[in-house]
Amino acid sequence: MTFDLITQDPASSARAGTITTDHGVIETPIFMPVGTVGSVKAVTQKQLKDEVNAQIILGNTYHLYLRPGTDILEQAGGLHKFIGWDRPILTDSGGYQVFSLAANRKIKEEGVVFQSHIDGSRHLFTPENVINTQRTIGADIIMAFDECPPYPSEYIYAQKSMELTHRWLTGCVKQMGETTPLYGHEQSLFPIVQGSTYRDLRKVSAEFAADMDCDGNAIGGLSVGEPEAMMYELSALCCEYLPENKPRYLMGVGTPWNILENISLGIDMFDCVMPTRNGRNGMLFTTRGVINIKNKKWATDFSVIDDGLDCETSQYYSKSYLRHLFISGEFLGLTIASIHNLAFYLHLVQQARAHILQGDFNAWKNEMIPLLKQRL
Image 1 (cartoon, one colour):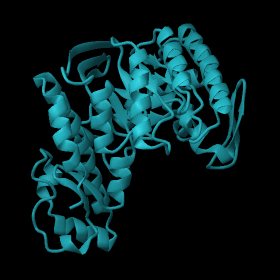
Image 2 (cartoon, helix red, strand yellow):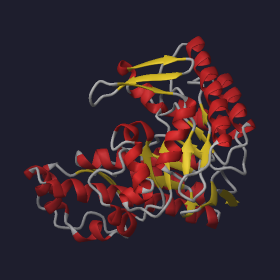
Image 3 (cartoon, helix red, strand yellow):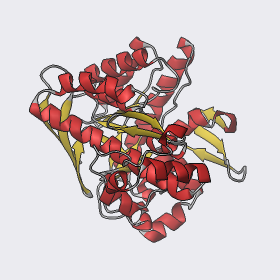
């Protein structure tokens, strides 16, 4: 994998670049739809390509390990072939499940014992076998195994957690060096910066990750309940210590305005379940603001969902019809809303990139954020 930094906005730290993988080029800044179990909920891979224009999608190691299992994925020739996707894929290592499945796991020095949410069986995830699992899944970008501490965390817990993450990272890097890809395409490892909300720990962790000299770096443990201002402060701090010549990935973030603010701080890559999860609940992000499509005010609005978006689905169906689908409990409504929201997110980062290249990103961002936040 290579990263080419094209330009930086003169009034902020926003960057435009390209990430080149064996499955294609990714133009940054980029948003990556989340396909946890090899499926972006309610959206087909063809729709992801043709309407959303997704350049890269995510899978999750923990979930794919449990279902369908690495034996089936290996027989299929890897996740790309299994799901019919010929563009880049990134896999999360399962580290986030250390946080989200706290009731069903036990952290030890060697790794984490998970109790399956499916059948209660127990499984040990270590830095080494997580790398092996991601080799078998076959993603282009794979994440180091980490612990994502909750918010708030006491300083001593956050420090011990970060140090454990660093020891695990060392094991991941070593295992990467001792193994090879299975399907004829290269794989890149991204370390994950942790340290909770403590500036000194974040600095230490960012420097440790940078010293690993991997192909890119990620920032984890944010957007887990801390105030937005704190997220921005810590994101900016991490970017100070992560190398300029490597892509920076802020994990699990977030709203459209979160994304624009973090782009301005120097972040290149984003993922979040928000566009699909909120879409399935009737919340639409549009070029004019946020819509709750279930509200009665849309019952007789026969205008298209969003005429400011170059997406066939958004310009084909009316707000009235989409509301009718939600009120009637029709599955089609979930698909339409999910496609629309994902297309909007991709449109937003593409617009951000265009304004970075034009040199007026910061002024555009400051105009857009109040617009994006308004409730229609």
